[in-house]
Amino acid sequence: SHAIAEQIGLTLANIQLRDNLREQAIRDPLTGLFNRRYMTEALDQCYSRAERTASSIAIMMIDLDHFKLFNDNFGHDAGDHVLKAVSQVLIDSIRQEDIACRYGGEEFCIVCPSTDDQQALLIAERIGKGIRSLELNMNQLSLGTVTTSIGVAMYPDHAKTMDEVISIADEALYLAKKNGRDRVE
Image (cartoon, rainbow, N blue to C red; front, side, top):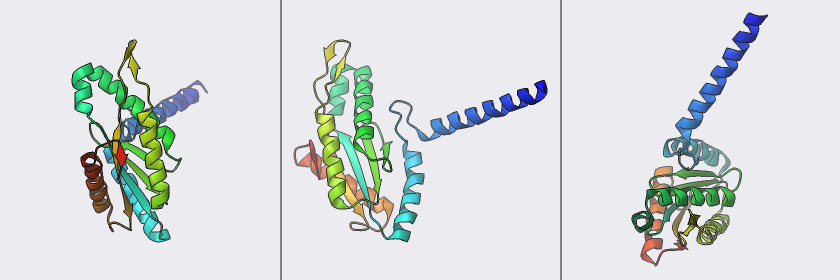
């Protein structure tokens, strides 16, 4: 029975290891958000479901305003601190079924299945407001505030493929920056 217990222990350790590795493969280590690779997989699933059920998907591209300046002024530790705080706002602002992902350096993407444009705008505004109202401090030093520009695009209203929807959300994001930042387009 000692051998059986040992075997069970090893099996459990293997399962734990596999889960940890999977977790590492799909999550960004700094923010704990999903990574781009996982988002691509998840988008395929959302897309098939949306096609089957004739529902819509909202995609938000989110970029922190003047983040490079932030890193230059306060250093990369402060930058990392801000990215973590922003990621927490994203997690708190979205619904259970939504997917938040770190898309690149200071760029994030949110996928909202079964969401119409009104709901999408509400979520985007909530994110913008949450980030704007963050009180960022590190080592007793106030880091000031950070704002975001957000671009929103809808499937199937704006495009028929996920890549196109992402690209349109990106254009909307660029427009938000052009129109003065700290806004949703």
